[in-house]
Length: 429
Image 1 (tube, one colour):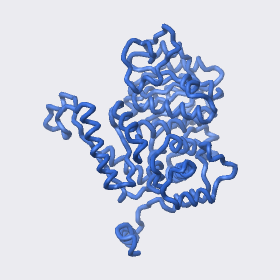
Image 2: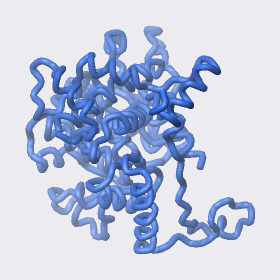
Image 3: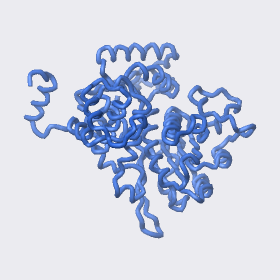
Image 4: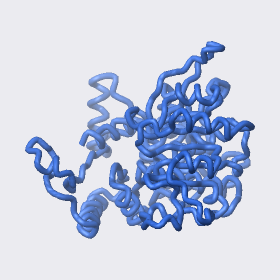
């Protein structure tokens, strides 16, 4: 229960979602760990997890009841196993208001950091060669967001975009002819152009792919060792290597910011899933701040945007607009420092901007049920914006409306009582 409560606290703190309109839910399907099954102090259900048919029937009943009781509810899926995460999303995304933060939220925030990194890398975006280490729901979700970005932004085909990506899992580089049965979610990125080449280690894959970007979602501590990091630097003499160790907490991070800086002669474009301290370059005394690709940049805005404009569903392009808006939200000082994400101290303002971009894109797609927002967006269309493209742009009018509706704690007992009465009996005020 701590995880959904913690997530909802971030919805409130970062994006100003009214806490009275949130509901934390946990579905306990048991555990396959014999240790926990036999532990009398284990607080969860001490029984094996069910088969897929039982799982999907049970979740279907829960979700159907939720949508029947609360027709406008937004459901965020979190921490399901990889196969179930993709299965639930595929089953519900086109018929109800929902999204999966592990797949879509992670993909969105990393896409924003990648957009910022590519601008500074010195290598053309479509010439990037991107190697993922770890092929779970988060890794595949991030890669699919990047594929969509390449297709939309640079007008290339899906096959051309997909050809820019390679994956390494516990058995090596993922290929169609590796000899094992691939999990369904891995098939999309399995390579077919490797002939008889099979890379059984990250080191082998690094030499075969010669990547410009290395992205880790493996949960393997120090997977990016000094040899890997140094080799990434050597492979990219004409551009800055992009290295994103995204696993967290720190005990599962593929490398630290200090290691990445030292091994790349301070050239790395870095973002991590966990927070690392600043690094001071010994030769110059210059202080560099590591970027953290934290999902709290995006999922609160998706939630607030959905609560305000009431879309019928959440599309990939709406989430893509959030990514573009996050990349656009860097201020001049942050850009001058080469940072990939805005400072976390600005999270409320950034969340408002991302929410405005989400709503604007939803209106462009004809996917909004609250006509109030349709009128505001269409009457204040940004100049020169092609509504058929995804820009992440919005007007000051939309932004101002979002900020006015963001919840803040009451500053007095009188304000609290007024807001409580208004929430319970809006027609009496």
